[in-house]
Image 1 (tube, one colour):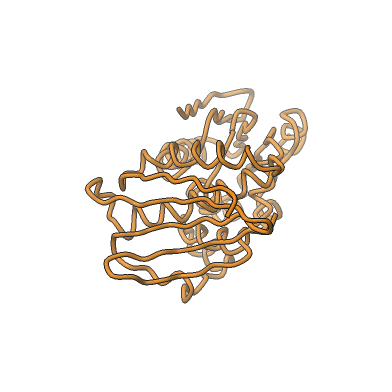
Image 2 (spheres, chains in turn brown, cyan):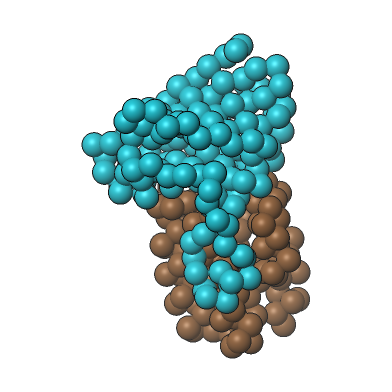
Length: 111
Length: 137
């Protein structure tokens, strides 16, 4: 079961992911990201509860790299379990997307 | 071969979660780290997602078989596909920079499989394709 919540905190939109993102659930992630990037120039993704991600989820994050750069949107993922972070590292996406260890560090980056 | 585990899945995307659970259960029997288990689950998930979505068009009347074997050197993952044949060995990888530029969401699955697995074989038999993937342990 995958649960994706969105909420506003200060001037930031936070997307909280719980569960697994695969070919079935990646559409939900895409919708949450699309709405958040349309609403705010500071978007954080809480990955503490993200237990698994497949290429479908990585592809969703990858598809917004260009847009966040062009529109100067501050976009940071945080709190990823080590095994999930290592998946971002396989294709070097950890070098192309900002990933921080904690919410505090992610907030420092966007403030 | 010391051990062999088999799982049959209908070609529906909601089977992917069950396939991952099966792979996890099998790999936990072997002495494999949690990070490595997660990578191997990912590679199997990617192959199965490709077969279910592209070879079998998510038609639950089709099924794929997954067989996990272990010998003294390797864990071997064998996939039997009865849908449309896919030549995994001659798949041309896209460049990640081009995928980013074009804002594409797809194209990463088999790149991950190629990075994670040590060796990939493809065997065509009458009515089915067998993909065999090896990971040294």
